[in-house]
Length: 462
Image (cartoon, rainbow, N blue to C red):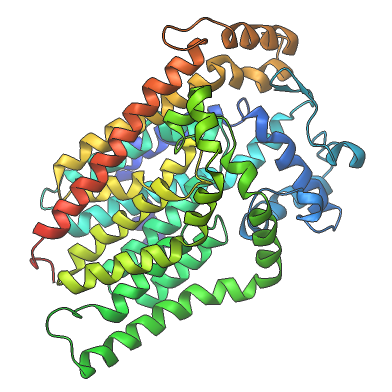
């Protein structure tokens, strides 16, 4: 009993406790009132299929890999059995998704649905902040730096917008990528692989970070003191890492294979989406967007052969660099940035949550990384609101309170969409080009700084 009381006292007197409570309250306030109307039909449809005992990938009802459903399904099943209703679409409506009126989904959104949908986001969001704090304590020379990095994550408006206004699950992906990097830094390779494997079951991008990291583990010291003995030692580390990756993938194999097939069939459609982050310069301008879409075949080829490309880059790194734990960390961020830059399906700003936690950690070691972190956060936030305007996310509030009617909201958003631009026909295109350019510069600066630090980083962290 005394031990429990002592533990509780320590928790409430910890330097993060007050800020953690404040951040938690802020998130709880946002949870019932905001969501992206564009995706709500997919969320509802997938859960309706699951609760009915059907395959979540039937008729492409789900847009997420299988692990997400094993997070959300228990919450919604319990709530459903307790009598809660969420205004799911009827089965016939599911086949066509939401019925848009302008750009507003016409189905009513239950505040309880939004809260339950975001409970896992809340958990992984706060876990990511705590992991950032613990990770930075391992590498930062200044005792105040871990708290500072934690607060930047906890109160970053971009982080709040992506998880609680958009309702995307990318914070879960970012957590598993960061956890994998942390375990690699701690030389716990099976745990690192397990983290990347679970991340891949949340969204497929972490596997494209794990592949080159596995190559580096297998061939490190290839360019200097490489020997048969060192290769055998590296092989044991690689096998631990690979086993960790494959355990969750094998466990979820049938659903994951089905999801991957559906995703592959939709690659062209994803590339053609007229809005997004990799297409910042292209999608906002109709002429440039048309030019890019003429070369979709080549873009798809780059996507298909990306694992080979990153394999080759990893071999170049191991040939010319001697790796310490510090360089392994920078390498992880490097490949996370390359995934974000080159894969054509990464077309939305919430995917920055894969990189921002890593940038916070390495900014504690190299302060110049705070500038691309700032650029990416600002660009992602304002690009997101530039697409449809800030009032779009008041839709759930309009459905639940007398403050707005959905029709009034639709009219306001439609009016925003036709505001004239300066260099483009519409203001929304101007804003996307502006913040897209800022974000692209931030990403390029990130990669250049990583290359510089990979060349200069010493072996001072053993």
